[in-house]
Amino acid sequence: MSSQSIRPKTFAHVVYRTYRFQQMLDWYVTVFNGKIQYHNPVIAFVTYDDEHHRVALLNLSVIKGESDARTPRGQPGMDHVAYGYRSLGELLDKYTELKAKDILPYWCIHHGITVSLYYADPDGNQMEFQADCFTSNDDANAFMYGPNFETNPIGVEFDPESMLARLRAGEPEADLLPRREHLPVSEIRGSLLG
Image (tube, rainbow, N blue to C red; front, side, top):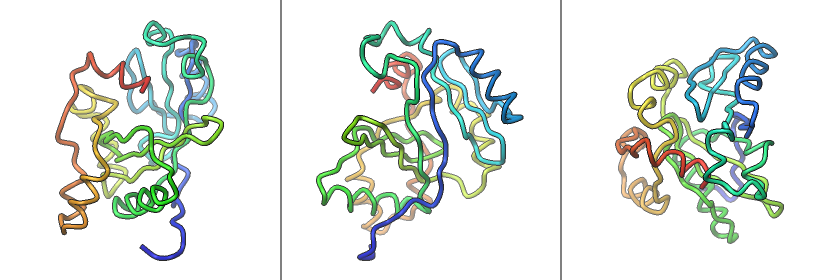
C-alpha cells in the first residue's frame, strides 16, 4: 500500500428502501430506459448500461415485519451508495487503511458479483466499498441470471482479516473472488436488515 490514501475507482450504484416496490421499479426502468437484471418479491436490480446494476430496490412491504418501522432502516429512503475499487487487494488495503484510523465496516459480505465492505458515517449514512468478482460485466451479468444468484441474491458474510491474510500469504485474487458458500433462502431476509 502506498502512503497516499486509496480512492474509489467508480461510483457503482445506489440502493433504495421502498413501500412502493413495483411503482419504483417501473419508474427507474422508464426514467433510465433501464433493464431489470434480477427481481424477486424482496429485491430488484436495474441497470442502464453494461454494469451489473446501477439501482437496487428493497421492498419494505415484504421485510417490514422483521424491522421496527421507527428505525431508519425501516423507513423508505436511500439505503446506501456504493463505490468500486480496482481490485480485491485494493479494497482490502482500503480496509487496512481505515482500520488504522479506527473506522471499521459494520457488514462484510460476498455478494457473488462483488466482495463488499459496508461502512456508516457519523450520521449513519451507509456506503458500500466493493471489488468486482468478474473481469467483465458480461460475466457478472451471467452470474446474476444463474442459479447461485437466484438461490441467494444477497450473499454470505466473510471475515476481511482472514481474506487479507490469505491474500498476503500469496493466494491469488482469482481464487478468492468466487463465492463458494450459500445461505438458505430463509436467512436472506434477515441479512437484508443487518
